[in-house]
Length: 561
Ligand code: GLY
Image 1 (cartoon, helix red, strand yellow):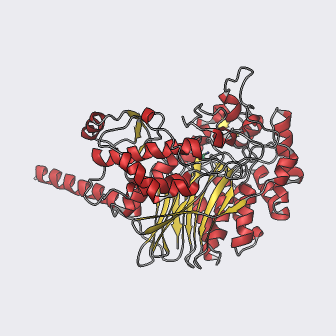
Image 2 (cartoon, protein in one colour; image 1 turned 135 degrees about the horizontal axis):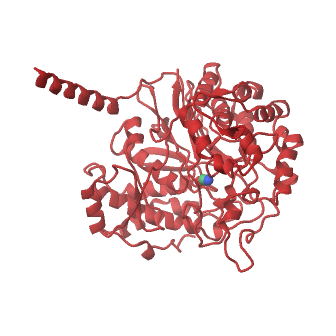
Image 3 (spheres, helix red, strand yellow; image 1 turned 90 degrees about the vertical axis):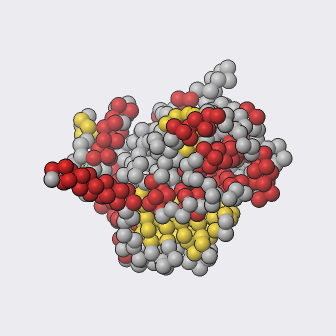
């Protein structure tokens, strides 16, 4: 009897565990927001419920994340927004940071021409001219329907009245306390008088609330001019940084044509240069379209081999050909042509080609961080918004602007400070991404919308620096080739290869020992075992049900109605 109940108990347990992993949360019917923070997702859904559209919600979520998810949500950084409107209009807004006007290509080199990484990735010398505020306001004015005051109100409230810290946010603050301790203004925000915050504490940000109110009263001038600009520029200049009042005053977001492609009948819309995200994603899909994955076993060595080989060619091209299109002629059409993809496909052998034998194509005519964040929005009108934003490293350069309460970015590290020299992500860049005054640094952010028969089907993106592209790629393949639902597609383990270093990074459980052995036999090298990306995705099915998944690697939230 006892044995029987034990067996029964184990069976029930096994059944509930497998159910837990395969269970899809209920879909929403009207609108949905998926972001790295539940409070911010809820802000977006409240905006949708009020009748706001997906752009209104996306802008409100952007400001809310600056309050509730300060490791990557920001006022002091930049980002990219990809928009598909129900009337068929498709556009993107580029609010990437820029190099200050008094920057120069050798600014991070010593007298002997050696690269000094600390100058480009920490301290006030690492700060790019912020674009987030200008970009969000531009999106709201041009494509939103609600007033700036209505959009900012929830973020102001969260900053002013505070919010209860969850376990992960409190832990993240205390984990970074040593870095914050180098700056009094940062300790004032991220510690309780020097002591770490704990789960359950209420976290107030009065200075950030003040800055948000400046924005509410004065629009972009509340950030790029006046007192806020003074606090920001003075702190930078006093400490030897480059940004001036003029840099802030002349900063403008740019509306750009999306990068478009197709994959097995689906339409792909993504972000173009100065992000490499869209170009590389579509280039990868174009190459992989030449295979039929119908009979391929997901996760097999044969499947991983094909992904990895395609990744090597695409990241090699990235290193040479991608940069700010306003400064460098990026050969987008050549890179995205299906013929070019076929040429690469033909070069892919059944064994690994060493990266040293792959060089960026000469016929046609890298550098990023983990702590970017993505959010996806879909509304009841059929509009879709996919946004990725960043201050580069986790909490940017860790310096809070004294009196204004927002963190500075360290985005200058995304330039190739010395062509050929790897950055903090091991990415190599070339002339296309060399520092020039007023230029935007290359990004890998890949906010993406995929359409099925003209209607949004997938809205997704990820943080992860150089890994963003391969992470988004694998979720797309999981859905489009392997028929996975959005939860499974995001949850499944992933791999990454970026040409250099010539090794495959992989998540726990991504590669079984057999698969590892087979890959090594094919000539591949294995790299780090590590988490890759944090996708926030939405899938809209044929019945118009809206399914969402926040990556289990993070602690975000799906909210809808
Ligand atoms: N800083 C991360 C990126 O722009 O890709």
